[in-house]
Figure 1 (cartoon, rainbow, N blue to C red):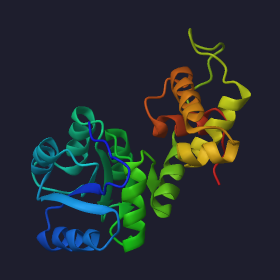
Figure 2: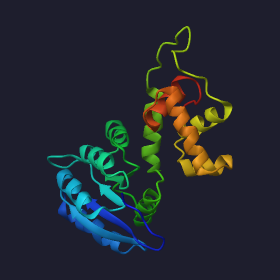
Figure 3: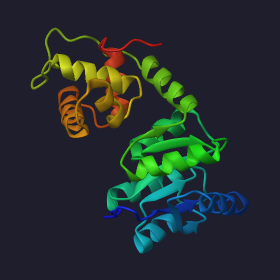
Figure 4: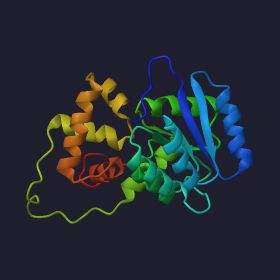
Length: 227
């Protein structure tokens, strides 16, 4: 598992099939403090192999690549190398791409019009385990969650399903608003460890596998309303 010692730079692998884009990102990252490029890959398979070889903190991942695409590569990396975080950096910001990447385990999602500083912030945040979503991506994700069809209300709760506590309901509303664990902790004046405990309980009670499913649950069950 990757671990970052205090003072060490965040190591990054860049995965993009377009050589000019990939090399431009390498040059850009080289100008950012606290970041060191550990390698570059031209497709998903090469990215997976490179992560296995150099064990970086973060992968900047394009989605549309030949052979093994970015979503598949993200799923393989997050499954086999949980200490390596994936930040998607792509041209595409459609619902299918966004939800597919996040469900595969991507911790961040930026489009290629992101600024140098936005990319730098996303890399550092991901290395610290914090999610970062481009504002436009976040709006699309919330809209997709709001459009998800509401399941028919059963006469009684399914076996094992428990009501959320008031604090868990509050955390779920903040998840539905696209807040990261760190942002939720700051909003509620609690530790991130406490937030993680609440999130895990919310996932268990709602049958959610990830934050996207939790968002859908929140909108379907009245814990959040579309903006």
